[in-house]
Length: 102
Image (cartoon, rainbow, N blue to C red; front, side, top):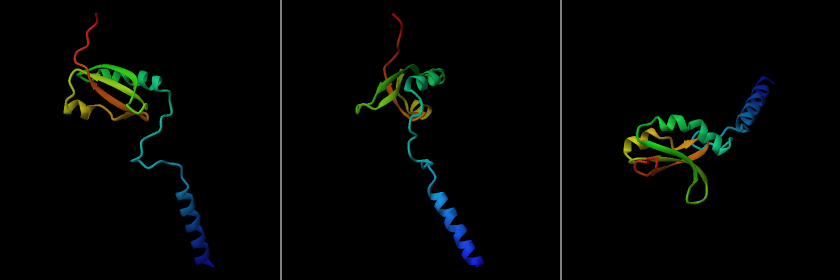
């Protein structure tokens, strides 16, 4: 009887573990917030990175919404410093050169 109870508890534990809704850590996070709010929340920290001259909301070639980051010159160092995604939205890095007001 004790073995049966142990098997029952083990089965229930495995079933509950298999039914969790957590995404594997290697899967991209799905966006939960409006992209404009995400951009606003991260603009200051992105602009603080040397070489970044602008942040915008844009789209990838396939139409997927993204956060665009404009840089003076795209270097390996900047690629390492800039995130690949922000709160589930992909980050697109664009080399624009210096941007000056008119």
